Length: 463
Image 1 (cartoon, one colour):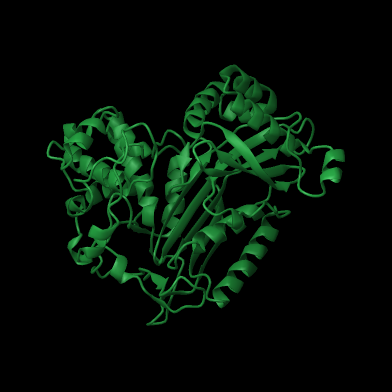
Image 2: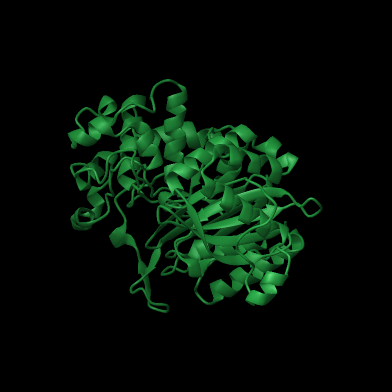
């Protein structure tokens, strides 16, 4: 299971057989037409998932996946992942078929926990058309779903992306850098728009962009690094490392694993207190604590899941306590440096940093309203929950370090999907381990600028 800034991503499953929902179109035509293999796999997956029977899911994995997929991600791990996913989602109900092609299909489902999810199945081109992957993405806006429209080859992909981004930039709907790679081979890397609109400084390939919550992935990597070293234990409570934590109940009940999985019950540091605080005074992790830490838990740790900036701020403080250095220094030396990420860091807002993009947000939430600098919303310095800066090239180095296991994360066998967004900030990193494609979109415009571009590019990737 991987999380894309509030987006749950579940990768690499498989299937075949009959189902209980039909492709889009006239109901009589749909009833008469044979169900294509990808949609048939999805039917079987939904039915097996809702049965709740572990043995049935095991049989599904055994009979619906290709041998190559089962070799890449073994059956036993799939069963373990099913149990975790079943516990979180409870049940799934099909809302509609989004796409129905010969090699891939997507359905929109609603989970028992209330989440909307897009489930996409991809199959091998030749018989028996077994699954090569099954991916589940949480959907925030069903209207923003982009069905797959694979290009014939990478040359066609690059041409389509180039035209798409040029049109968006010309319409002032995109400003940033896009990088597409297959493994270490860069297929496309271009910059659009301005890093500084007032000074007319254009974005360049090496421009540094605010990553937003993508920094949480670095924090996660750092914590798990310390866990492997035996310096942090996942089942230790907050109070073991932070005995003076302002909320005694949270300190006693919330464990490190709860913080990592956003099941701690600790809330957000954004809100009334953040708005009322002079932003230049928020410069260390300790400066964030008064914004949220004394508030009651929103639920009993481990009983629910809710996006938590506060929880990742606490993880940063735990890193500082254990490592004996500040969070920024720790990730710089132990995450960024091993990856060769020389252009990635959390810079103070008033620092003079070369090639840094300024963020621009709409004055009003309407298309065409003026764009203004986002300084009023930026803290004096980002945190372990987000707000650091990087380049597209450095983010590629990070993905390759995960691929080569220079940096170890336990749930990236099938790839990675992470994103960050705030006023004047939107970044997306997508890596599909099966195909090797990596898509990186960094922007200095509001969400969903990067998300829309990334979704379109992902829909075009050759299959």
